[in-house]
Length: 206
Picture 1 (cartoon, helix red, strand yellow):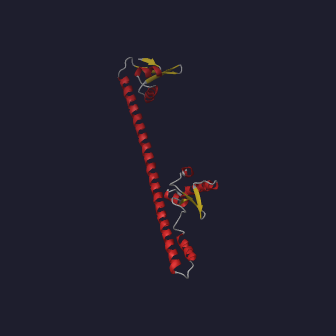
Picture 2 (spheres, one colour; picture 1 turned 30 degrees about the horizontal axis):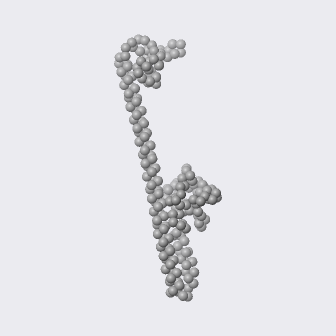
Picture 3 (cartoon, helix red, strand yellow; picture 1 turned 90 degrees about the vertical axis):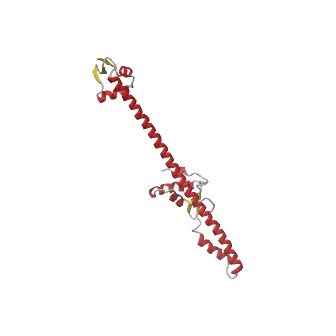
């Protein structure tokens, strides 16, 4: 039996120094301490101990490779989940915009019909009064002044933002509005945004 330093033992068994320390901690290798220096006590020949060290090193490398593969897979699945969630949210927003546009077109047609009726068939009624009444009826149907704009409240609902986060996000949008952020608009004291044209990720971070 002879003694070796940790570095010499690592070179002798063709493994890393960390592998030597691990074997010492597990009791697979004997060691002695002289003058504060730790030495590994090994047999004169590379018998079973050497084979075990190589086997342990290969097993450690395999575990590390598997861990790295699993980490990469988890990262991929997280990115894919986020992509699908964002895609679903965008689809909901696009569908909402389409529905609002349909309502707007329908309301425009209704206004035209009402104007014709008021002008040609209801001579005793003021056409402007009829149109004002029509505006009162439909004001809650149309949420935006132009195509693509939806209210902040509807946007956060489609995004499935938790109630405890909504107030913080609303404060960010109000602060941006005070700075004349061109991505935002106000109608009837409500904040509107256009997610089909602008990115609002800087205002949505949690």
